[in-house]
Amino acid sequence: MRSRYIVHALSLYFATAALPADEVRMRDGTVHVGTTRVVGTQLEVKTRGGTVLVPQAQIARIRTDAELRDALHRLEAQVQVRGVHACLELARVARGFGLTDEMWRLLDAALRHTGSSEGAGHPRMAAFLGELEPEVLPRKWWKASPDVRVRELMLRLDRRSSKAKSLAVATLLARVPDAEPLLRRRARGDHHPERRIAALRALSIRQSDPKVPTALLAAILDHDPAVRQAAVLAHTAARGRTTAVPFFAKLLHHDQAQCRVRAAEALGMLRDPSALPHLIAAGPAAAAFRRKAPPAGSTRANVAVVQQESYLRDYDVEVAMASFIANPRVDVIQSGAVLDTTVVQVRTERVQIVRALRDAARVVSGADPGADPSRWAAWLAARQPAGR
Image (tube, rainbow, N blue to C red):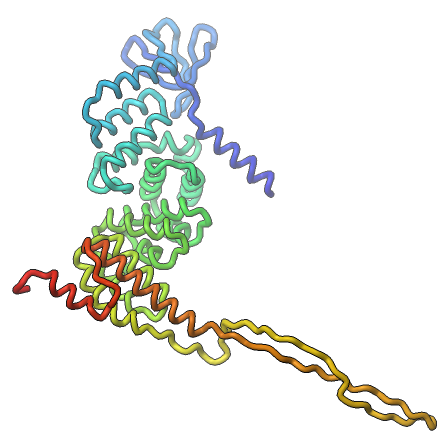
């Protein structure tokens, strides 16, 4: 099984690796980009869309992979202002030249200029990413069933994938018909964080989730901090920050300390001023946090340090055939201590909740409310303008 997985992984790597491609320009203006091979009087061009045979007599010019890279670098040097639109146009040129690696690099630069890893607010970016199925997925999977397309798109992601490629895969996943159940299952159970993030982005782009979006649930339930952060960013990029504030505000008073901490962290990621009153109001309750008593039969968190010593307590005398037999009776003395960590754990959770609320309030407001939650309400009232 392991050898089969390795072979499949290697096939994926060589299938998606960028091979040197030439640009073949015909006399009628048609352009083909791909690996070339001479076949008699014709030239075979293996493009992403299939193999094309063209007569050599009708070829106007052929530019090699090295010449195309030089041409792209000269265009980059001529661009004075590097913004989102300039990087997108250069990426489009790189795609036309068949320079996939250069295209991903330029798209990453465009994402950095947007100020968001989701490319929010730039419809041109989303439209361009949606056209990149030939660069991401081999042709044999273009018309496959939804479950196969979701699987193959997910397999194109790993830890080395760039942000632009991850966002392109998410955009393509969002366009797979009837894929909501598959994407929700991937968002909850895929063991690769990059693939869970892609599924969450795709669901947010589709905006077809149930009443509570999967991205908001992942922001609380996922064990990976990077996935929780990506879930918050994906939801806000698709639906805005304000829609997520009420959901996280309710969880600031949850019975589980971990839910309170992660809800506070999510509100800090949102950076929405409307979240500040909720964070301040949750401070006093967090300072007085008490975990509910566990039900009868629950497992306790404790450790026992004991020492056992055996000793001879007595003899049982038995008479048999005029013989007396002394049967020894052995017992055990046990001494030591049992340490229960329940009280320490509650105290630790209380400190964690207060710290998370304080950090989130500092991020949202740009100021520190202080270490004492009982004074946070007065601090907030002093910050608000008079008459409000």
